[in-house]
Image (cartoon, rainbow over all chains, first blue to last red):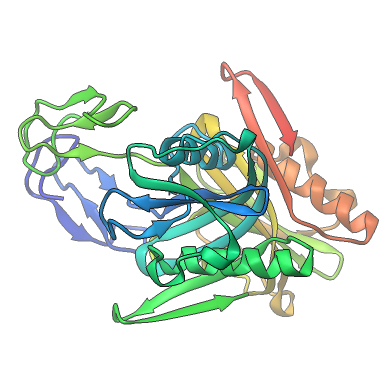
Length: 188
Length: 188
């Protein structure tokens, strides 16, 4: 932040405001304090028969890798609406029966992932603008070594473990990355 | 937003950027697009024996009403850390055994509430800086007509319903407000 978005001053300070306990961008000109907060990412493990809807990313980061449809929640949406919208935008697939499936903290990048299990209506899907390819993939063909992010790998692992057991439940956990190198996954 | 926080231009436009489908604040000077996204609020139904920890708000909105300790999640926190921090800041209470209890969408104000059930360690609590009073309250003394927000009422109702049944489970729902007047609560 170089300029105050309220008064235009370029005298922005990065300091702990009075009565607060965290560093914030503050404008001494107009006394504005700017808060930054974690982002919610939401998406679907979208099923059709015994297959899962996957998308090959057309955008960075990790263009060309495979992912589940997911993205940033927008203002004025519910979690469920955001997950369904992302699935439609990335794979033109309409979904039903959304059930909360995994809630994971990614504190090193200030994100919370909220993933749903869902059914694809009529098994219809194609590539949205952010996808190079869209496919229904069965368990034996999941491209485990070409997945976009650790949270995608973890969500798929949890899904197939639950499916094997015959019971789907809500999973809560955390993924962190130490010094941008080693990934740690905790299931609470 | 009056000025671009990147380049200082006061020529900010509120428009749908190319390839997007939502209105954003955009700077035609430096091509910056500013995204605003939902906030996560997290807190605890913090138990001690058969009582619940409640705080009388020392700050607006709704100063003087009773609430559960809760507040905005901060960057680099997990949901659980944020809920425990809020409980400590508002009621100087340390918590253990946090369990996910309620996830509610409040789309009309672009918030997601994530409430945990927790135990207060040693039953110790006092008023933090944002609280006028802090009390352990039993079910018969909950000040139902003086609660701060509909989500607090809903969370307490769910808690006492579960306690009566003898089983606590995760609750998912939505609270909306039509035209700033009528409140609608949906349990999914």
